[in-house]
Length: 87
Image (tube, rainbow, N blue to C red; front, side, top):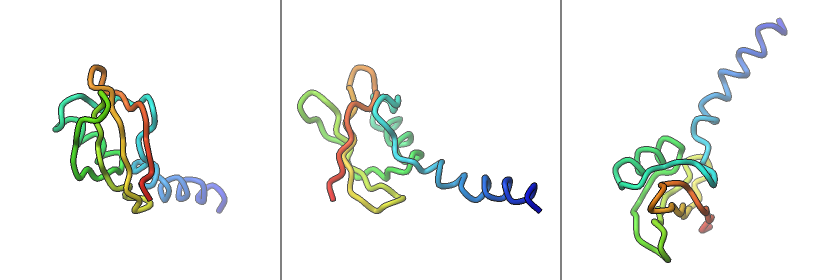
């Protein structure tokens, strides 16, 4: 019975892991289409992009928590440099 519980637990929690928010250092991309796909795959549904203080700001909603988030990307590398919870 215990041999069956571990695989079931891993399968049950896999979808949640797939929807984890991006973290600082993740490579998202520099063009809006690529960045939107990567962010939404990570569980951050993008509302809009805008330039802010030399960075690309992605305004999105965390699908796991429902919080409004701001994810800041380095425009040269496409990496996440900062994440803010707006709730």
